Image (cartoon, rainbow over all chains, first blue to last red):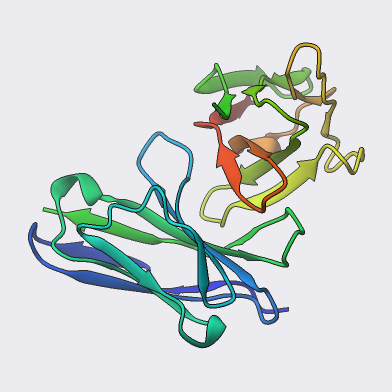
Length: 113
Length: 108
């Protein structure tokens, strides 16, 4: 089966600019996650979707971050405006509902200068 | 509060020597525990989960509820085991909390 796809793989922007990341989960996976991984730390959940509904966005900085999953398949994560501390790898993952195991994409490395 | 602690940021082990990556957790219910691994230039992937009770690539991990630990072990390290290892916990709601990770470096 094809894995989780993400684009772009790398992005460099200046602070206060906006950026968007795209994720295509494994076909049939109802649950989709966005994580932020800062250098030297483990992935931190930003938002979890079940089909096209938000299950948990308690750690999403909603003043600048937004995410959507239209039609319950692809998802986009947006940052506007970016701050220096947003520099991180943004990981997308998907899973069957209740499966526990998550399948990760390659990530997008964001550098904010 | 739910928490996963991996006390070692870096673990260096000689090839052929035993490996133990430590993981302790804090959770008020019955969690599911995982080990995820990220090899160089590859994506994060599941290595094993405690409910499977299986050995993957020679690695095993036993859930010790009394000590709230889920240490990852391998009797004889191989060079291809060099990677970043993350211990993770799920409370049964499909969400996973990750530890900060331990980099395992196998010395020749």
